Image (cartoon, rainbow, N blue to C red; front, side, top):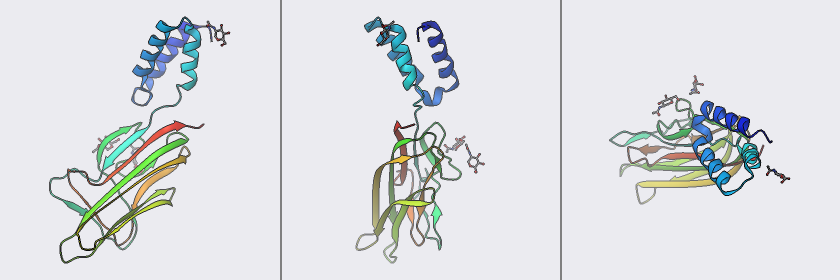
Length: 196
Ligand SMILES: *[C@@H]1O[C@H](CO)[C@@H](O)[C@H](O)[C@H]1NC(C)=O
Ligand SMILES: *[C@@H]1O[C@H](CO)[C@@H](O)[C@H](O)[C@H]1NC(C)=O
Ligand SMILES: *[C@@H]1O[C@H](CO)[C@@H](O)[C@H](O)[C@H]1NC(C)=O
């Protein structure tokens, strides 16, 4: 841990190959700031190296980005919701053609789902979905249209996930959701901290 120059070189190389997910500029700035404050240059660098593999992971997507309201469902079977509008997909772990978020790194994640649906006066429909990890239901959002025709439901969980786990939102059979460029339906996840 005393070869300061080589450490800096490595930091730069890793940053160049992993710019999207490592937040390298922030780390480099922190190194420079800490070096100014302390004289423990090589220790500071080594410490930052030990936390460096905690690459960043965040995705946030919405159902669509269309002008006029468009509904998905109801269907006679359960279906994974493929969110097409991408706000952010840091690390590219959310696949916008399958709807699955593949966990890049074992750790504690925050997952949030919001669903919305609106029916015409004559219909009674439910706005419902569930959050799944490897096909296992983690939580369910459920709103049945009653007096009002608009329904919305949200859910936030912090959960331990393992690298390779597949996370998705499933539209429950018989349920529907609607969206436009107001983004009433969103699916968001990010790594709080790595645990491997
Ligand atoms: C690095 O840290 C160790 C243990 O904390 C300390 O003994 C050593 O003097 C430090 N080295 C430098 C260059 O600051
Ligand atoms: C969907 O993902 C692909 C591949 O990662 C990307 O090129 C494309 O821009 C994404 N689509 C949207 C709408 O973000
Ligand atoms: C998304 O999933 C499809 C189907 O499995 C696959 O062909 C495609 O390469 C994936 N896209 C990305 C960006 O991984």
